[in-house]
Image 1 (tube, rainbow, N blue to C red):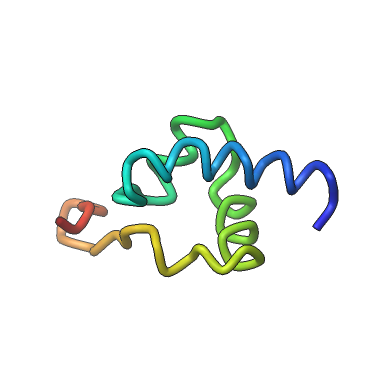
Image 2 (image 1 turned 135 degrees about the vertical axis):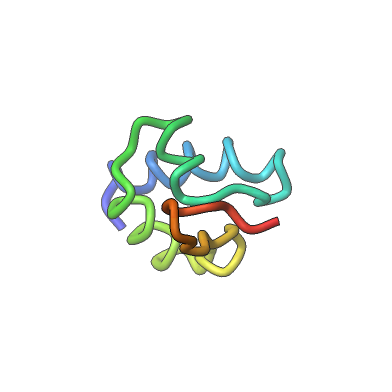
Length: 66
């Protein structure tokens, strides 16, 4: 990982860990200002992808799972 992506990983961890990873990628993006695709890449690189909640699709758009 580059120093920049390591700093972004810190931002992600600092936001999500206190919330016990009960967040979605969109929640992280809203809080950090990072792009969704960058967050996804960092989560995969750090092995954190399975920690975040997923979104489910309904007829009116995405709804976060409980």
